[in-house]
Length: 142
Image (tube, rainbow, N blue to C red; front, side, top):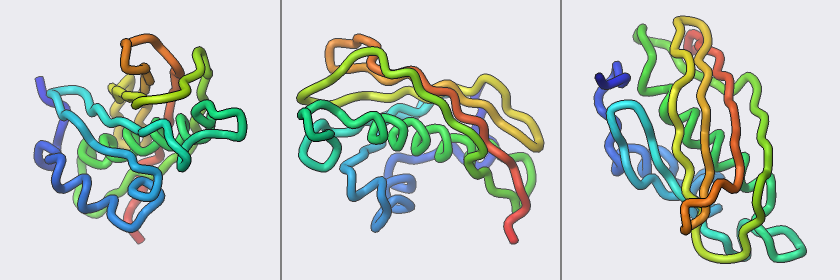
């Protein structure tokens, strides 16, 4: 059963909403929308690595929050609401030095005032690189 309450998000709509933002600057792309998940990816390149040449932990967190936040805003119950980040944590499991890292956001809880999302990041071989949990506050657009 689909979780989306505002339309099924389209890859084109999400890309357009992300133009001229940190998302676009870092090369993050939206890849797939399913009934209960959103997949995106980030390149491992000069925009996203730290001085040792591995994906910066902050870049992983930007990908995780991007996917969870975008998904959360397509699951709102009332007009005039937005979902904004309240808390995020991330455990970095494995380093990545090249290619792409893919993230999959899935809801843990979709409530009227808060949402909780789990975002799993994996390398191109499907090995876990980071696991993140994002809590979103649902507020009235002011």
